[in-house]
Structures are given as structure tokens and as C-alpha cells.
Length: 389
Image (cartoon, rainbow, N blue to C red; front, side, top):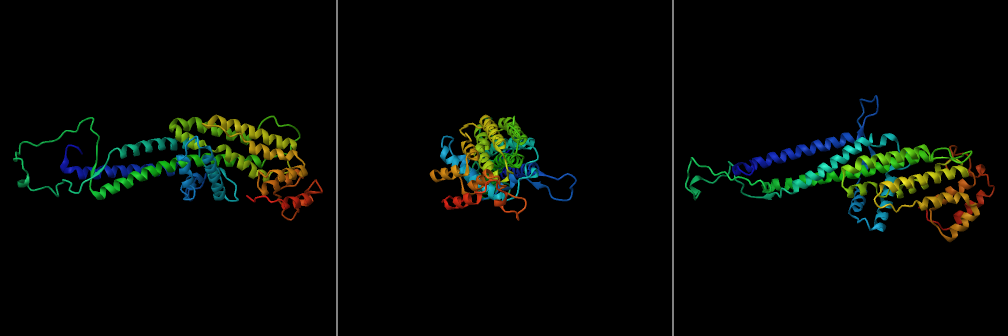
């Protein structure tokens, strides 16, 4: 009808735009439903929006995520730089509080729905762009038809020419300048919504990783013997990542899958090292269990990432420092400084039997030490020029 009734093209174009706007509103509402949750028994408060959906709209983070999408797979140094930048930004957003289960998107099934929405909206936006809307100043409509005498062909009331649209002809929208600008803005909103959905999926996968690793590092690592398997929270994390990969990946293109899961190894290493301050006087068996956890994570990441070149060597080297004496570690720092001052200070406390994060702030760390030279080691550590972050 848009092609065969030129006198009413403007009205049909307005109708088409109206439908496109309504569909966008439905998609936006569905997105909000999928990323929100209501606490059981709480029918008064507003639904809680997952951190992933909130962070995906933070202006500080958007350029980093967009840069990751546009970085070629073979440009590993650029990817690693953006991974580190994203990790630090997300840690700043989280602050000192611990990630909670209610901060996550309610279920992995919701992530699957989001992935399907991303694919559908991306396809729909591409189809809209193929409409190739063109602007016309003088649209024919019942309000601006030329007088009959101005038509060169003789008037024949019993014959009306209706041009038939070819089945292979590309549909185009003929819009006024104002409507053309509106159409372009509407197309942009669809592209932004699809990008928001993809960013939200990626960030939620990372939030789940932080959530489980924080629980892992707050466990008991003062063991009586060798641990036969990884921590239960590590197993839960690996199961979640595997399920997410199996269900989400078929719904998105390969490039989107790579974007969702890339950089997980770097995030895991960062969280493990930063969370070492929550360890409560671990022993050798406990540190060996942490190394077993790292190995399990490495195997999991290897199965879900496209280019798995993340060996977790940095995390392994950090926790292996526990097996050195404080003197040997300080001597090693003089030769090569790989970690921050806070990381070394935490490891020094663990070596000397000190709780890096005591529950009673009135209790001095030196009084907890099993090594009476702990205070001297701390002085020596401060004497070294080590970057704080």
C-alpha cells in the first residue's frame, strides 16, 4: 500500500514509524524486566536493577567496552590494556562493599533471553537501515495535491493508474525532512539498545565471577591436610560459566560471544590477588588449595574463550610467594617488582601468621605475628620503592 498509493505515502510512513516506536518501547520494557528483580515478600519497593544494567550505562565504562568491540582479535596488547581498564573501573564502581547475589541478573535463563533480544534487535536495526529512507520536500498527499488543470495527461475518471511494486524491489520510505530526521534518530536508539544489551550480558558474567571469587577467598584455608578438589564456590562459578556459554553462545554471533567472555582470566587473577587480604591465617595446605582453585579456573576459561592465552601465571606467582621466607621475598622484590605495595604487604602478613583484615581494629598486627621480626620486615618493605597500585 505504501508503494501503490502515492497520495497517502506520508500517512503510511507515519503509521510505520509509529509501529517501530511501539516495538522499541516493548523491547525496552522487556529489557528492564529481565534485569530487575523483586525481593521475596517485598511488594512495595521498586524492583532492584542488576549492577550489570546500571554499569553498562555509565559513561566512564562505555568507551572502554566499545573499544573492546572494535579491537581486532589478534591485537592482544590492546585487548589486555582495555581489560585492565575495565576491571579497575568496575572495582571503583563496586567500592569497598561485597558483591551480593541480588546484584546479579536473576537467572542465567534471563541472560539467554537477553542474548535472543540482542540478536533480534540487531537484525531489526539492520533491516530498518535497508529501508534507505529518503527525504522529499513536496510529498503528495490530500493536502498538497496539484490542481487538476495542471496535470498534463487528460483526465479519465474511469481509469486510475496504480503502479505495482515489484516483489524484488527494495522497500523505501519516502519521508519529509522532519520525519527523516526522526527515523534516523529512531534507528540510532535501536542500535544503542542492542549495544546496551550486549554490554549488560558481558558485565553480568563478570559480576558473577567477582561474586563467587569473593565467597571463595572468604573461606577456611587453615586446613589439616591436602584438599582433594577445588572450593565449592569455584565449582559453582565454573558451572555457571559453562551453562552461560552453552545457552547464550548459540543465540549470538561469534564476535559477540568472543566479546562476552574475553578478559575473564585477567579479571579472575585480579580479584584473587586483591581478595587475598580476606584470608584468615592460611597454612601451606590452604595455599595449595588456592592454587588448585586457580588451575580449575584456568581449565574453565580455556573451554569458553575463543583465544585462550590466559595462563594465570601472575596469580600462581603471587600465591607461591607464601612458600618463601619474608627475607627471600624482600630480596626478590629488589630484583623484580611485579605486584603493588599493598599486595606485598598482604603476603608478608600471611607469611608471618598475621590476619591482614582483623575483625578487632584495636588489636595490633604485630601482636598477632608468629614471626617476631614481622615489624622489621614491614619497615624493610616500606623502604623499597614500590608502586602503590
